[in-house]
Length: 184
Image 1 (cartoon, rainbow, N blue to C red):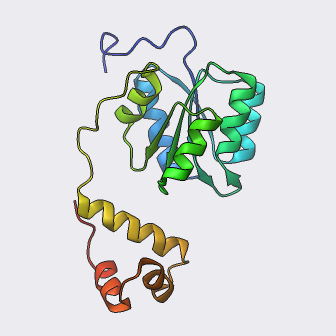
Image 2: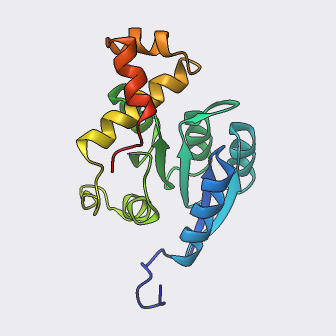
């Protein structure tokens, strides 16, 4: 991305990225750095809170579910120290209740994974009433269904019978779905 294409981030370009998926975290940090941000990475709630307390960032991208707790704790820590910060909450476990909780606590926006760097940047830079444009390549309905099944399967510790019960589907049907490749 050339300097002319980079958005105007203002004087403070600090960006705190909090996610326990280390490869994703590194990729996102590189992508956001190319877009003009100055990213700091944290892999846990504790590390995110420490960064937020020591050096409150102008921007933040926080995963909702982290190994050591809830990412909303990091959002609160940032809001306490820097109320003008723009914060996007990312999650693979999208639900209306958590989106509402994130926005009430002070998140600017809430995005479901997988979100690419452009979607995240658009959400971070959107002004109050202006909504970011819809994603260029949204997931197909089949892909959304498959992602949801995978999430529930992981939450049930990869127990097919329990997952089938929670999804209200036959166990054999679920096994066939899990055996297939993910749709595009």
